[in-house]
Length: 382
Image (cartoon, rainbow, N blue to C red; front, side, top):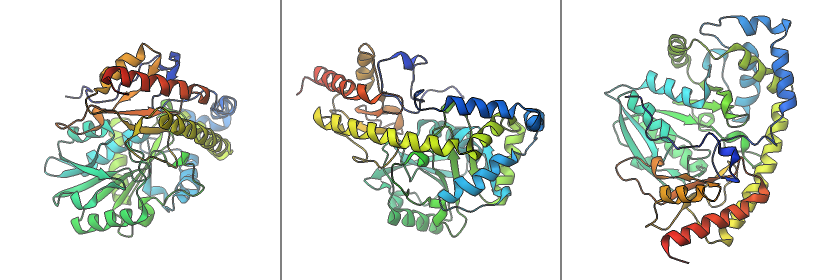
């Protein structure tokens, strides 16, 4: 069965709510409409006619690959060649390709718990054994990874959903454990571009001396989710297999989208957008942290994240945040209940996520106040 049961629910009309604390959506006031439109028109021009109309079969836009190799990857301390990179339809498609190539019903995949809910569905489709591994304040606990593990899926830069950043020592420990188990690591670096630190923590792949790490990058979080554009970086044999699988399913991401993105990146509009988003997110993050403290809410994840766009929250144990979310909708507030981020059967119901990527900073405090008041009403506590 492929029906989606565990994914976070996001109303299509989320932008009509006054307090949309939901993750991964675009703030129109920050996006560079004018330059994106200009780049799209460039990609429609006679000069780019071939990139617009050609069937690449199993190949990708050369300009986009060039930018990834010369700009995106070096920022993470990663070097690669053209035949070690594959463009995907977003990070989720990259995770699916990796799972299909690397796993089968005889192999075991270790995942973080809690983690990105669609990843569990992706792994179930591969028919592999799934081993949830708990987190501590430093992220995934390497010593708890089962000995039979073949592939480890991790989000070390901003753990989903806790936003924990794995420190360097823990990253080195994870690589050592993978080496001892002869396991591969799929590193999902979905949110590094919007770090508020001047120098983000090194990518796990940049520390990898044995070629065990497969790197997943995405432009969907930093540009807009509807773009569905990401990439895989791995060994030549792995990328060759992933390329063949992608070609058999969808051939390649649309040429016009790839070339438009390439123009936007190459002309410097992307860096300008990232800088603008980082500054704005830093302001919103600070306001939200202050408001959370003011109204006595509890942060369950990283209490002082240096990037990302959300806080992982913990309500009183007796509160079901699905009920809280339903009640908040009536007050114009959207939150994400946290139950589905946890692996069954032990799925606590009192966690939730508050994101700030698409809410104006002037509305944050009042929205947090409404959340806090409703928690008090539902639990009868002060």
